[in-house]
Length: 283
Image 1 (tube, rainbow, N blue to C red):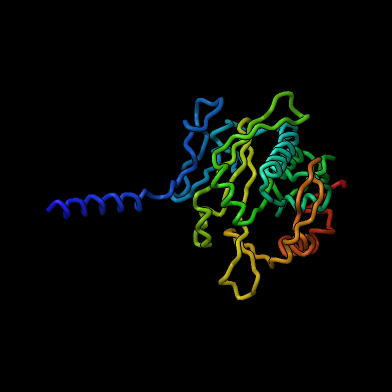
Image 2 (image 1 turned 135 degrees about the horizontal axis):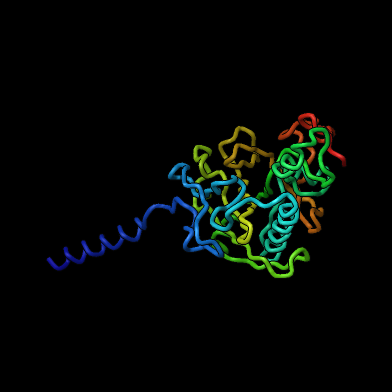
């Protein structure tokens, strides 16, 4: 009888240890990360299984940290600082990362961060030319990638950590939050609500960097294919070895075959055509 009770107790403990509850479906709640706001401006209208939620006023802001969008001039300063803080921090902690997507296209043209939304606002009454600020019209945020092993490292040691960074643009150090989406371990593309694997968030402005994982895709018909949950596939040799470059005043990594990658994602004309939707960019 005693042995049976002991067996049941041990079995109960084992079940409890294995069934530790579901993965957290929402990003860290407002009360646990709030800085200077008294109200949460995060949109909660998305699917329940979606981890990251954007602000109610713009999809490229985190409503837990800001109540409104920045002005054009403010964003022109804040985005490069956001990038410099991220790249510098990742280098300090030994996490390899590289710029991608529209950010890489911005590097191709003029090594400036793309801020399409604010450019469009400034062009409302001048629909023939872009303002002389060296930004591109087809992106609104910063995108970077990491390997699956790097994301494991970040999730294990740096999830929900705050990093302080000093930049010449600001007199005081700014604080940035690194938040990992626990669903990054699910590499299925059916999980379209969680294609962003992590974010680097400016806790004073709400701006953030989307971080996505490239992982080896063993089910792909082409060998040595790396895939992201957002639908992008790459031959491993097109990414690695990474190249060294500079972007917004900081050393960055870029994919090895950047011309081919940009041509495939945006078309060959994106590398030579300085006009977009009737606008002419003054490079």
